[in-house]
Amino acid sequence: MIKTKTNEPVVLKKFLEIPYDELETMNLEAAAAAGTLPVAELEKKYRAYLQKEKRLKAVTLCFTDIEGRFHMLDYDKQHFLNAGDNLTFDGSSIRGFSAQKESDLRLGIDWSSIFWLPSDVFGPGKVILFGTVLNRDKTTYESDFRARLAELAGQMEAGRGVSAKVAAEVEGFLVKGLSAEQAYTETAGFDLISTGGYFHSLPLDRLKMFIDAAAEAQRAMGFRNEKDHPEVAPSQFELNFSYADVVRACDLVQLYKLVCRQVASNMGMTATFLPKPVSGVNGSGMHLNLSFFKNGKNIFHDRKGEDGLSATAWDVISRILNHAQELSLILNSSVNAYRRLDPRFEAPNQIKVSSIDRGAMVRIPAGNERSARIEIRSVGPDANPYLALYALLRTALNGEPLTKDESKRDRVRFLPGNVYDAIRIFRGSDFIRGVMGASPHEKYLSHKQAAADRSPKELGMIVKSSEVLFHHDVTTQMLWHKF
Image (cartoon, rainbow, N blue to C red; front, top):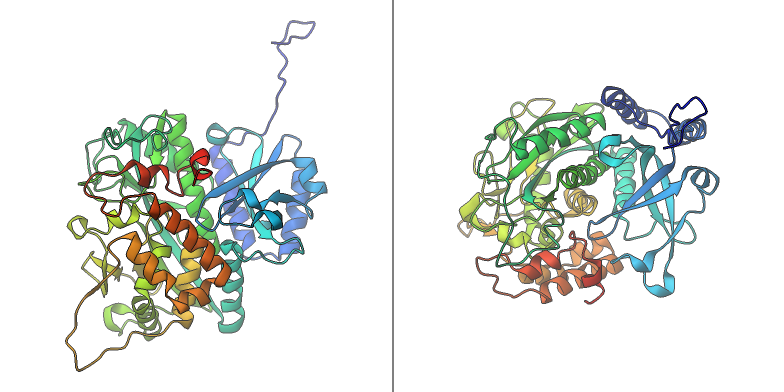
């Protein structure tokens, strides 16, 4: 420790640390400004702030690859401000991005996406912003589905006057040990923290302490949490946060998983978002609650409509159900995801809509003129949220409605029961190829096929090491390079 001549200790590092109540205010104000101020004004506002705030050491710029992995780069604050129009990275090092011959990609800055971070979780002196992946000529990179989702949302607003609102319910498991996914073996499995269940945990159990810490951090980041609780399976959790515009809702999903993983790691544990990390208990989902608004009015609501939904909402449901099997590889994007679609554990594997049956792919929750929505329950927590919502919105707008053949009796269709069937249907779908674009469709397909090829076709009841270690959301970089 350095001391002055008067023997007083000198504080060498004075990086920014903001109390949680102030953090929440700052982040909520930033969220409100993002929805009202022009982008140029936001850039001017936050550039001035970054220049003035001397206690910031770095700006974290993040983006998501085609499979849904979250990537972060820390830029020195001054370099970030000076070179903001020329931030480059090696795209060939990111699976699902560019080939080596076209490796240089750029990162644009979404100035509307700023978050101040709780320093006790992430360390002091940083803010985080979301980036837009660009080609060398600064056009949107076709495999960046956050950017493509933002473009689609803008087109919906400009052309139809409609905005999509989304609230995501993301479930996960808390297990013992650091890096438990990377250390996974099928003989030992995961070591669960709790044997409790739905809404059950003592106030100072490790599961509840984790939930409290993660929820506190999320509230400070402006998530507007609504309820936080243990889920049905032992050691399972769910922290619900309020609806938002579709791009911000996806940003919150990515930050939610980041916060949970970091809080768990700080406590010597692992938060995993594998859809089915443990056989014999309920798996984890990412239920997406979707509604459309026009002129401030929820156009999915009709008090006199069936189950309180409008004709517009029923049309969206029809199109999604019609293309459900083609969408499956996007919404259930891993080998492990198809373990979750097991009807013995409240699995939403039936291609139908219901207000009461939780086995239905689409559920209609009770709602009113503000909260009327459709809940797409089949989505896994490891899905790329931007790609999932992009595909669902494109389907809602451009898909073919489900038609009924009056000469045949109704039969319930089911989602694919394994990743191989999902890959086959995805490969043969001209509709999905048109939604994604030929090149992203082929890239995504190749990565899903590679992961499937490294797992046994008949998975049985034991979660295999291969479906964990070769999972796209488990950071085993050395293994990926051995593919």
